[in-house]
Length: 98
Image (cartoon, rainbow, N blue to C red; front, side, top):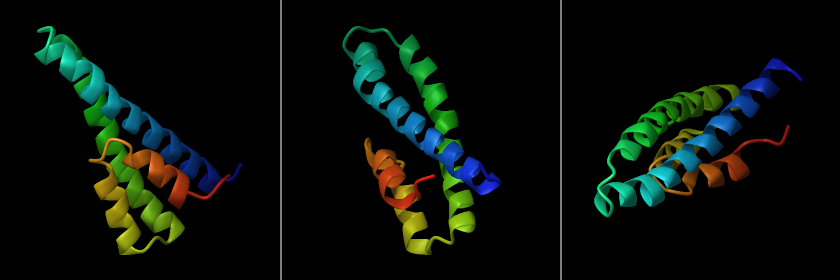
C-alpha cells in the first residue's frame, strides 16, 4: 500500500469515527444529560468528538491537497462535518476506493 493509499485510509477512518461520535453525542449522550441528568457522558463523548472533529477538518484539508479537490468539494467536506450523517456521505462520494 502506497503512502497516498494510507493517508486516504486514515482519513476514511477518521471520517467514520467522527460521524459515529457525533451520532453518539446527539442521540445517546445528550438525552442522558437532559432527560436523565447524567452529564458525564457528554463530557466523555464530547471530548472524543471534539478531537475527531479537528482531525476530520485537518484531514479534509490534507485530502484537498493530495487528491486535488476543488475548493467547492473542500467546502462540502467542511460543511458535512456539522451534519449528523455528512462524513459518511463524504467518505462514500469523494474518497477513491483503495
